[in-house]
Amino acid sequence: MDEVVLRLKELLFPSIADVAVLSVDVNIEMVRVDARCTADGAACPACGVRSNQVHGSYLRFPADVPSGGRSVVLQLRVRRFACGNSGCARRTFVERIPGLTRRHSQRTDRLR
Ligand SMILES: [Zn+2]
Image 1 (cartoon, rainbow, N blue to C red):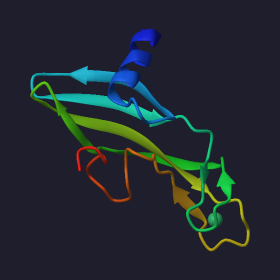
Image 2: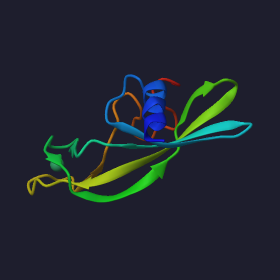
Image 3: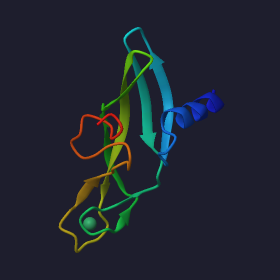
Image 4: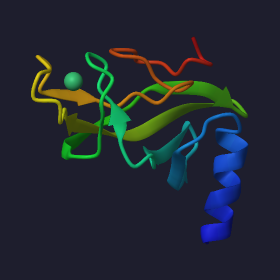
């Protein structure tokens, strides 16, 4: 099963690093891809200091490029990190996945 999921990741996100596909659910109308970021931290957008202090996470559901007539929706777990820089005004921030999501976007970059 691990091998299948690994191939799915190559198939679905060939150019995106640090994303793991956990599962794929297909029904008549849609494909739901359960994915998460695997990077061990993220850089604060305000000060640039990297953090790996996870401060919670939540799910986002950006729509992706349709596949074989079915709509594709990602179920993407994104993490919120605490900025470790005491001089930074930003206390927490949400990771971004380059090539996949932007802030407040309901669609992946490639669907856009
Ligand atoms: Zn910061």
